Image (cartoon, rainbow, N blue to C red; front, side, top):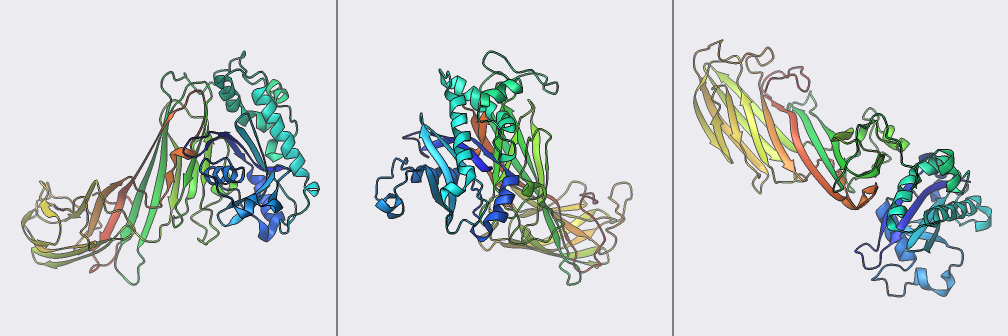
Length: 491
């Protein structure tokens, strides 16, 4: 007798989505049991958005839902039990216990300890009666003595901690949530919460939540058959939550598109209160396959006052964003260079900036450059030791650009010219510097509508994304490949 997930959804006629998810809780340990018990008929718990849409459709609560639909409205599908099957993503989520009261939809998915095909009799599923008991208990708690929306918001804010006591690991122990409230001495309307020692103050002002996803892509490209090119994405999610109250609760969901690259090696901030086990076990050490967890990645937390990094992650994307080819040949005091760069077709062709830096170590100053550039412009640095190819904000329609030329050097001056122990002779590299706003290489994003905030007032939600190059090297293919690591070079 356990629950896989619980939702509270406010029904809002006339709103674009028809409602808002006010509270949701998933139980990963129960979900693992469901996967074993249900076998081939197993249907995973969906993200809040698709679940709400499917439930509102099934309950005929969508404003534009006026047409007769055979699978839902025929006489053979008259529902007298408040137990539904929701069609989501080509599968059916069953059983879903749900009912509407005071413009609030209470819903849960009980665990069925057998296969779901065909549907077993409802009387044989003990989790259904337990689900009703839990939902009625939540309803009584929310509306017992309720007088205004502020009190409802306060009680919704208390639910995560109350369910830890009343329904640990999805198993109902006490449907009277007021008992749980008393037993843990939780803050009520008349008993304010105690300020935690790690939180030095509280915020007063307009509520707002800012979420920024920054991905840095690293690459080592050699253009050699005996040495494989390498690349990797490292991401960070930074949050700033300006919310009133001593212990506001926030849940942020990171999602990926259908062809997105799964997030791995996820590290979270200590303020995160719980995590799906699939998030913690996703590692870059393991071989990637179709069964790799691809989200959504939910992070419930109690935010500190300052800006903080909610989580870090890595990801193995199929290809690097820019493929490069670099050749350098020495001729006495001159070198001939050839560079080809190609932007992958899947990458957003809209840069804040994009430059290729070509340093020359252990040589004299650059005295003359003869070059042919198919796109952008070429400059020499003030120190006369670096060529800067300014590509600009877009690649051409062909997505390919090239640079060729001859660079002449003067006499060496050890005091002024850079020295490097790796880049000796023909061993040389080109380093790319670029930034793309409103884009991530993995496709990772935080949907504003999926952000749940359990605090007084409706906050403004802002989300940002950007991709930045970091240690993005293309080595001279005409020289032996050096043994180097990311970040071990000067420029």
